[in-house]
Image (cartoon, rainbow, N blue to C red; front, side):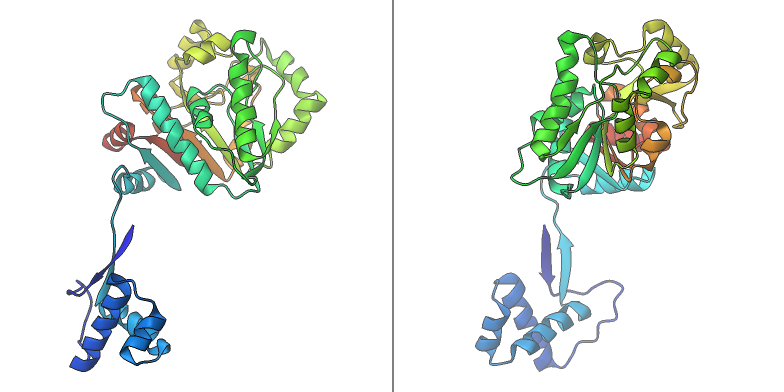
Length: 334
């Protein structure tokens, strides 16, 4: 909330008071307008001066320091912490949500998801082409907390990672994309393939299909990507989907310095990509295409995601972040 402050000295300004009568009139006009909410036309009538003069007096009052502007941060908002994250990690925008310090992982996911939902509802233009990762519990929490729009907030929502998995949990991936598209009034574009396949030859064969070629073209024209940030140890949903790296392959990744992944593209603490045989089996947006998306929003929080979030920011995988206060404070402290 922006609030004017009337009167007082302004540090760093050379304020020479006008003549007493002009100073009195200027102050009176400023108080009537800013503190009592009077319209400029009513002030002009009450003081028997022109409305143009009222406008000039208000501008003069601001320029000489009679009126100063302060910003009062509402409870539950953490503007200073957000600004520190943006400066520290080179983010275009950070959103920090309030979570009880004793909250468990489920409660943290719910709060971060709600923060992401509010952020999207406030910032989407209506013409955005949005990519979304498939197996994120936090993004599903985001979708569950969104409200349908009376007018389109995006033109299409495209999966960034293969969304086919074990039938018992595949509904997670489809519901995430379908519900997000419905809430935004956008067309849903599915990836009809698994996120991980057995070998590079299988991946290449699937990528050559007409459906995947169409999706790949859409990946190149996204204006925004909304992505969960995963640790090397997968979530329960990802594990059950059949789209997680098995334990022996996770050990190989850890030995290579891996700390996290976005859309199954694995990265180290400095953000560099872990290439190799495992990366060649992934059906997901190519790293080069992802890094060209103008707005790349990471949505994640909680203790086990600290290293992954830090690595994602270090490598430019995300340039905007929604997280919880505890996680933000640890990111700033480390």
